[in-house]
Amino acid sequence: MKYVVCVPDGCADEPVDALGGRTPLEVADMPTLRSLAARGELGRAAVIPPGLPPGSDVGNMSIFGYDPARYHTGRAPIEAAALNLKLGPDQVAYRCNLVTIGADGTMVDFAGGHPSSEEARKVIEALDDELGGSGLEFHAGVEYRHIMVAPAAWADATCIPPHDLTDKPAVGPTGPAAPDLQAVMEASRRIVGRFGLEANQVWLWGQGFQPQMPPFAERFGLDAALCSAVDLVRGLGVLTGIEVVDVEGMTPGYDTDYAAQRECALDALADGADLFIIHIEATDEAGHAGDVEEKVRSLERWDSLVLADLVAGLDRLGSWRLLLLPDHATPLRLKTHTPDPVPYLLVDSDRPGPGGTYSERALAGLPAVPGHELMPRLVGA
Image 1 (cartoon, one colour):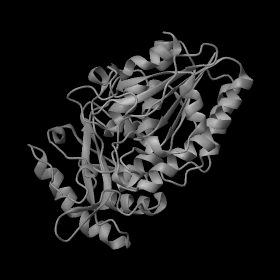
Image 2 (cartoon, helix red, strand yellow; image 1 turned 90 degrees about the horizontal axis):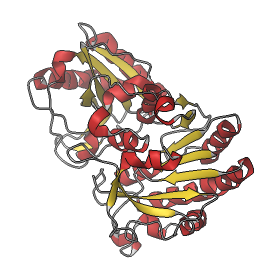
Image 3 (tube, one colour; image 1 turned 45 degrees about the horizontal axis):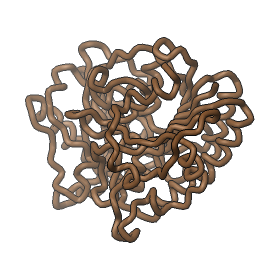
């Protein structure tokens, strides 16, 4: 038996006026998904436990089969793991976005104009040269997403994710560590501004200490691998011992090579992996941008470039089971995440389920199962 988990990040949504009161999932032309739903089990998953922030860190941890209420310590330390950073007990990691703040103090762009990773690396290296030291370190990640490591005493702060502040006043951190964090953010302006990017400073948030998570192979008895262009998902792989596979052409944007990620999954499964996780960020990016057409288009690419040939490839490998769900909702209207339950689809190649329609509205009346219970259900653990 082979297992695949498909994560179209943030694809769940609310009814959209521009789509005639329908959601992107209801509008998108996805014949393969419809076919899978007609023979699968459908439901709703509470991937964000009560009291935890509705972020991809929490949602993907749930999808991986780990209860965030037990294992989640913060977003940044997961991303730090993807950069092979080993945090000591006296260190805390912060997510360090390159952002654009307007002259009126509003969050114009939480992604700082989406600089290339190479452009951003130069900025982060300059920040480390000029602001680093005394326990402070800056580490380059992907595009606008980076990491700052600080002394443990800097952990005590309340920080708002920048994507929650789009077109709103950029409210900075509060709490005992806020003055230190604010000083770094202010000092970053003179450094970031030298590089000619749309970004004009850094934004610090998502802090936490290194989590301790049991290996996936020990929990589920399976050899697993994944592909994702997002450090957060890759970091969860590192922390749980899941093999992280690099794919040429894979990006965290709309231009990612969907087909290459599909072929990566099929190749890994053919080479002996028991389970593969495919994570693609594009639908979430479209939600944050409020781009209705791109969110629909990204869903349709999932169907035509991933699911269609994925199913055919899995059939050639023998029996298989597939789980598909987003890590959270990213409504176009809000341009940020919500903690609402999301639709899930579980398909077994040998045992047809009751079938139905995969959409938010079609499943709205069903009770939500805890998200971390779906992985054990998928693999029969």
